[in-house]
Figure 1 (tube, rainbow, N blue to C red):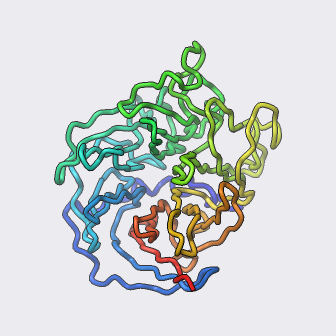
Figure 2 (figure 1 turned 45 degrees about the horizontal axis):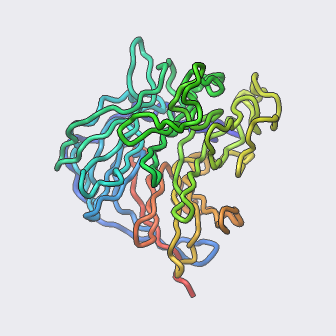
Length: 387
């Protein structure tokens, strides 16, 4: 399997030139393409282009979108495809390798608070960096009252495996996915925050029912551990369960449904090997007592990234689907769900030939994707018409 199967293949992308600071005009044309799918023809429309390795997308109530660029810019993309100048007030990011400005989500009370949450690689001392999360109030073209609510500790050297996605539950918690910073043993070390799924209250405080609260040898922020590099996470609207996807090494991309206090095995158990072709040094096999098996596994890595559910659309042939971006395969994965069971899988957007970094589902059931390219794009995908 080529190195491109892991997101590490893009480690130099963030160092390439940032998009112009001035506002960009909408594309002169927004062509639609008709592409094949397992259930008929789909329509794909380019909404915006000219983005610098966009990483995440969030829909605004007025029909516009917020889009992060890994190089550090947060932009507003209008419904007409116009791309704004950078929004001021974004925290300083460490834009190198896979680090930079990552996820953007609206707070659950955005309609009244105008608050948004950002995850990003935060610079530390002596060339170190770590995943961080901050929130701020969106006011026109400025992010005000910015507060950092989470910092991965300790900060480490290296350009890879920051994660990171942000998801809310219905009980006042925020989940933060991240990576082990390509330093494998940290994922099993409960005294470090690398390779952990973290659960906090919305203000950044630690819930007292987190599984490791009160343990002297463990960080209280930790919800689950033994993760490699979680670049996708979404909440199933039907059940409230959190699903997350993570890169394996050479082989072994996973989906997990993380549960409190459980160990998901990396690097002690894995279905992958090093890019050199040699075994993972710490690996003891594919299974071990006390460690969870993947909920779903790709032994040949598609390079999974952002993910989103499409549910509640009974008239859509894509109802009850989970979508995941694929970086290495340069396509969009659609998993068909029967409850929690994955009962089908297909690939979309092969014809586009671009690295799919994020995927989001709009209120009308259309699917939006971001492509992680020098000339990154926002695409809208409409499902085949039901017969």
